[in-house]
Image 1 (cartoon, rainbow, N blue to C red):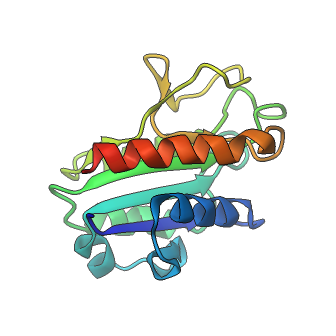
Image 2 (cartoon, rainbow, N blue to C red; image 1 turned 90 degrees about the vertical axis):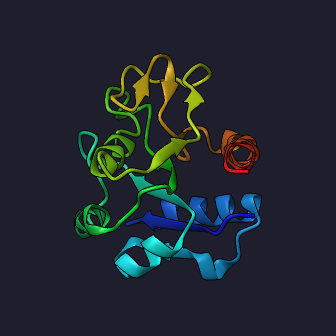
Length: 168
């Protein structure tokens, strides 16, 4: 199995809890799950697969700790790496910018040489719009643990299986 590391940005603890669920589903130990504030260029470059997640704030913004993290992503040599994105959001209250934090992460990685894995169909979600949807698919895993927490475990399990297949 390729070396996978999860970096998350979480203010209220929701994204952190979801990152832990994703790690369990992927079989990743706790030592490979980190708050983005702990991210180093060396750690990024030593991974084969980066799993990056953020809660979505305001009108589709990244969680605050990611602003320094984005600069670190831009400095790291990620050529040949694979990246999978996830975000949590509130589709009921912020349905027009649902999980757009993923878009910011993807944009930060553009030109890095990494390839993306883990897009999921947007059908089955109840939201009005998102820049994180392209050709009917989210660019990563979208989670609404506020209104659809009953779907998070199944969505994570399916996504983890997909990630393992796409990175094999």
